[in-house]
Image (cartoon, rainbow, N blue to C red; front, side, top):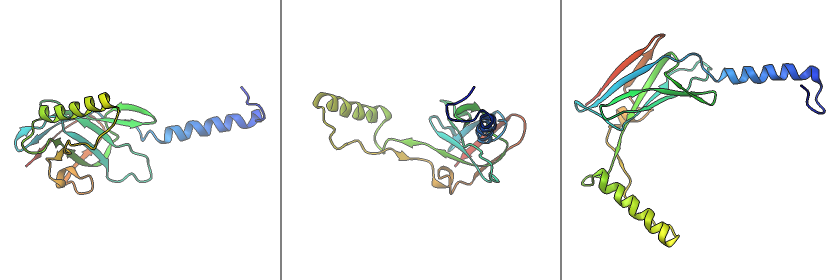
Length: 168
């Protein structure tokens, strides 16, 4: 294989360099991580769970994310080297759990209907009016939902892990 105007003797080292740079972002093998989130003693469905590396020591350690199911259970996924992988690279993590809900007095169905009505009006008129849909609100206190303030941590070592996070 050769590239026009590029000496063949320089191509092999270039390909090796590209391969090494690509592998450097992988951060190592991932370990399976599952768990459960409870809020005020009840399973928390539809919550975002994020594992943020505490200390990367110069390595590229990917953030791992999941969304809880109806029972509050989750299974983490990492994105490394342009692909998704089940699990987390071993290490120490800060854990943020966030859950947004419609404003007080509005159900999820009411909220979605407002969004659908605005979208239908936009399609009909071809113009985007200023939204009358209020933003959803974070229901989890910042000490658990804010990645810079969270009190939740997790230590992932080789092997599979299951964590339970109880948020008061």
